[in-house]
Each structure stands twice: as C-alpha cells, then as structure tokens.
Length: 255
Image (cartoon, rainbow, N blue to C red; front, side, top):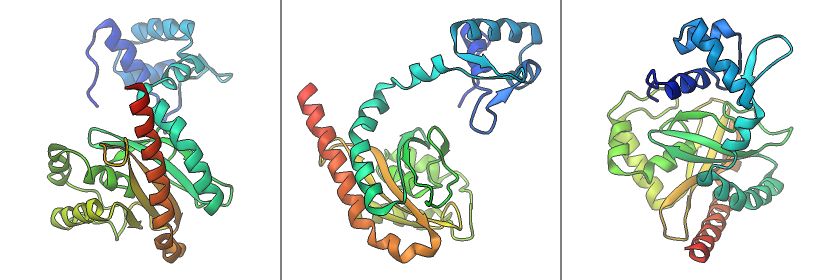
C-alpha cells in the first residue's frame, strides 16, 4: 500500500498504519519513528486520535488500536453482508469437520481474511482475521486469483513468487495451468503451499450461482490428513454454493 502524503489526514493515516498484527502496541517515540513524523507532530496526532477513541493507551504506557476504530471497521459494507451470509454455512462446515474454516476476499494482489472459525484441536495457522497475504501464497488466494481480472493475474505471474515451502508452485507456467484447473474444477486442494504442516481446500464464493466471485471459502487441515482433505472437496464446494445462492437472493431482493 502507498504511503499517505503529508497532509493533515495523511499524518493521521501514517500514525494508524504503524499498527498491524505483528506490531500491535507502540510507545510514542516508536510511533513517530515508524510513521516518519516529528515527535511533536506525532504527540498532537496521537492525542487527537486518543480523544476520539481510535487508539488507546495501555497500562504500560504504550498505544494500541482503540475500540472506536474497530466499531467503524466492522460496518464495512463489502464484508458485513458477506460475513452475515457466510457464517451459518461456515458453522455447519465446522460442526461437520471440527477443522479451521476461513473466508477471504481479494484486495488488489493481496487477500484479506475476514472471518474464521477454529476449534481448540484444529491445526495451528499462520493466518488470522484481518491479516493479509500475497494472493498467490495460499489456496484461497489462488482461487481468488483464478477468477481475478487478467491484469491482476499477469501482475502476480510477472512478479517473483515467494517459495514458502519446498512444495510451493512458483513457476509462472505451472501456476497458469493450476489457475486454469481451478476455474474448471471450481475447487482447489492446496498441498503444503504456505506451510509444511497444513493442507487447504478452497472454493469460490459468487454473488448467485453464476455471478462474479466475491470471496473464497476454505478449510485447513493438518498435512498428515492430506488424504482426508481431498474428501472435503465436496463439502467445501456445497458450502460455497450455499453462500453464493444466498448472496444472489439478497442481491435480487435489494437490487
């Protein structure tokens, strides 16, 4: 993502952008350093954000994202309806498998995880709600990439692809063939592409049965259960079809 300009709003965005999953809390001086702003400017911006509730100060004196910011973000229309519709289907899929169930959307050449159900016996994941990954890195991401516009696909295929494990497909020609197979089969088993300990099964979520792909639904199991993962193709596909049909129904009702 681009760095905001040094306007008043840009300075606010630069301060907020220093917080992420890996860096959830900062001192004032750390915020100034990471945002590239003078300490006096940072102090003023932080005070204004804190007064509004966008950030909060912890007991140890460091700052973190505030509840008010979460309240606003949770109302994002792009994901709110999607999550509301998808959650019952995700819960059914979880009850049938007791494995990690995830929902993700594409933003540019990245995917963002917007919902997740996990059990205490589910395999540990690298991903959580709100995290971003390069779209070519995960099974769900490759499903989204397979249905992205040609310019997005070429931007990914023409860039160096990170090998997360020895099994990661990084050759552009092999990936093109994989994307074509995903479009044809509508479900994808990602075998240890992101982590050597996990296998993912993912399917596209559309707006209606034949509408545009708006998200990807995935289930993640331990790599030692790779054989079982292939048996989950049909349940994942059925759940994705169910979400798609309900999204289409709501679109027709409100359209």
